[in-house]
Image (tube, rainbow, N blue to C red; front, side, top):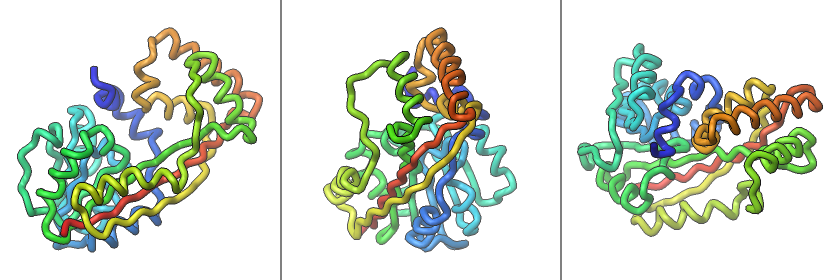
Amino acid sequence: MELRLKFNEDEQNYDRYRPGYPDALMQDVIESFHAGTQSRIMEIGIGTGQATQPILDTGCDLTAVELGENLARFVRDKFKQAPRFQVILGDFMELELAENSWDGIYSATAFHWLPPEAALEKVLRLLKPQGCLALFWNHPYPNRLEDPSNRINREVYQQFCPSDQALKEFDETDLAVWKDRLIQAGFASVQTHWYRRVRTLNTEEYLGLLNTYSDHRALPEARRRAFEQEMALRLQATGGQIRIYDTLDLYLARKP
């Protein structure tokens, strides 16, 4: 099974434990879209809708594209009271969608599953002239060694999933990758923004969150269970809590 379909296995858990997005980030997206009752917006890879309600609240016409059948069913029910919301089930790259028809297109922590060059080329075709694309991601970092809860996290990972790869917290220098891709794809007025926050999760919440990650779900079941038992045991030393340091990056770009 493709890793990107792992999210489709447990939509209830995904909705419960995946975080939403800061109000400041969502407001920047809404303002860039000039979103309102006359707007036609598309969300690529809606998941369980962590970035959906603020867009719906503008009164726009929102179409979501979702690859996972269970996820699509879940969000149809979750947002069933929204009269101008619909879900299209399928792979964004394979769907036939109306070109030059969308005021705004956005994707929240999902666009990296698509081939970037071809996906950006398709988005350009779909957007109206001066239409806006918004791409954003959340980069959780529970690996600050000055934080005791993060040190425990790192030790448990090294025990069960050893790696020599150096860990790096997302920072401003990393913004260049998607900014350059957008410029090379032919977008104009490319802007980058970033945001920071700290979340404190109890053990149940943290293990629930880990089970929304495709690589964690892909571990052999016996090793995954042993990993989670050890993590829960070790986090007792911090009162059963872990702090996660999030960096969120937002890219805004217009079709010329």
